[in-house]
Image 1: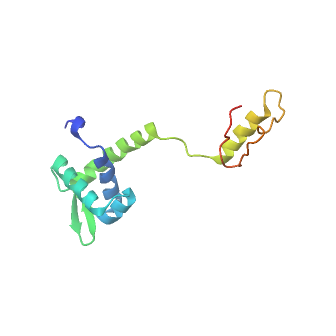
Image 2: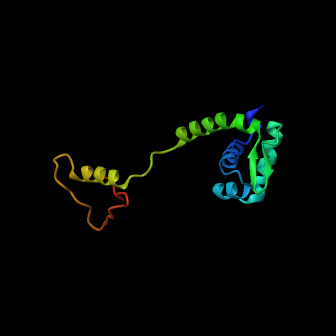
Image 3: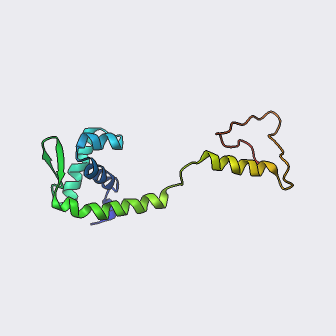
Length: 128
């Protein structure tokens, strides 16, 4: 398979489908329409040469091939998320950092520059 022509977003769609086991819920999870996710499923089926998911009442049950792909696809997506992800924003850590910078080298608080206001949860708007 040539990755130059493969839409890696299909792997995200696959993960949502195998987690939710329902096209509508998986589409909602991805913030796309149900027809868009159905189209992605059709492309996944073509790429992998398997149905991947079969309708069972209101659910979509994964095939054996989908179960075989589940682990490697989840691992690949986890690595991508780790590589491009940022740590979660923690306002309390930002406040401690800002207070340390405000204290300056002598340990005295310099306070904000005249005319600028700060909010405890909004990052500092001025350089030190």
